[in-house]
Length: 307
View 1 (cartoon, rainbow, N blue to C red):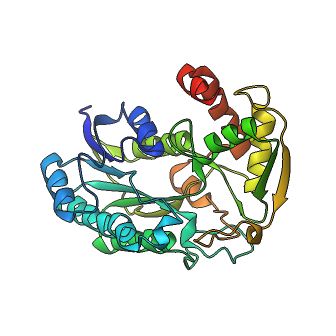
View 2 (view 1 turned 180 degrees about the vertical axis):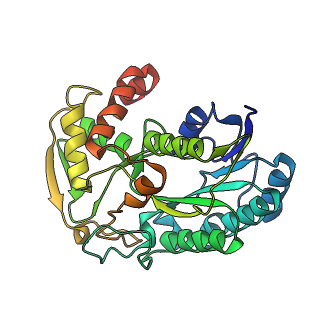
């Protein structure tokens, strides 16, 4: 079977880095970063896509500084809204499949149950609004696309919640974390593995065909917790490693930790559609956490940085 060309944007990000590994057997990988393509400049994006003409474009790049976006809305819009629109237009022109990542922050969190893909979005911060507008732009372009909405992403590398907590749990006797926001921590490795599985199931010859399955799919680890519950499980599973001890954990309300951007109280996403369409369901969040921690223990460079 001829290897298809796969273009990954966001090479050094948490998901982008994992995708380079999981998609290596699916095609010839070209992985780019901001230094290779300026996602805030449409002409730069068009030039790269027209030159590469890949079978699949995987956009793992985004403006993710949620609080900073409140005062940096133009750049957030350029990267999260305009860039996906341009990618979708060029993907359709080239006959490429576009894979894109969205967020639980497109919802306001008012629903009592986990959100399904057909629920009406209502973002309550700039980041969520720019991501939603990007989703809509991709759909409007009319090409083959997969938009994966995920939540609370973390992994073995980069700047993320897990690595921050491990550092704090080593340095501080007491940790205070929000306990009234609910969601599913989701590992970058699980996301990348799920994308690889889906692409394998829509592979046709040296290309990919969705046959009417374009659309939005929720993609998170199973189960749910709060940020405080996530911290509690991190400390429990990591105790005795990375210099982590037994800090006192204090649950607090969101009102006790004011931030520039509002967060939804309910970030839970129902992932049944992904399972029913592609036969993909991710493991529970606490089990996935254990796998990430095992990976960190095996990585001398990361352990050295945390120790």
